[in-house]
Image 1: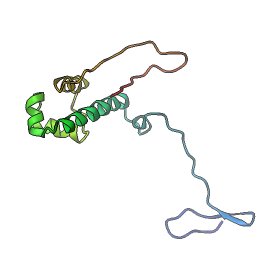
Image 2 (image 1 turned 30 degrees about the vertical axis):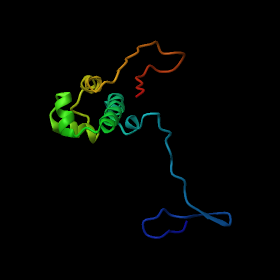
Image 3 (image 1 turned 120 degrees about the horizontal axis):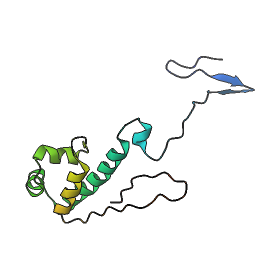
Image 4 (image 1 turned 90 degrees about the vertical axis):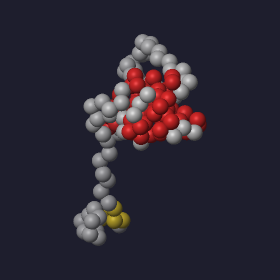
Length: 125
């Protein structure tokens, strides 16, 4: 084994070539928030999808945070939180209500899980 430069992993001689040891990689699942260990990962993912759509509608309508606050009945700091995807203090219900107030149709469909796939929550916005 040969030491690499400061801050680098050690180098190994393998035959006539010098190699670096491979890092162990764990295959993640489809939700990065679950991979990061968030207990409420599914809920945060759904909130993020709804907030993304809400932000797109606010942009398309050219609404300021102050104007959106009046239309949606939310204080301006809550609008700012949504615009910046800080969604911990905002309920799913409130995000759905905000979308309907902006003329969007929100549909919730419940169906049985098929085959061996796990039951889950999907949002298409």
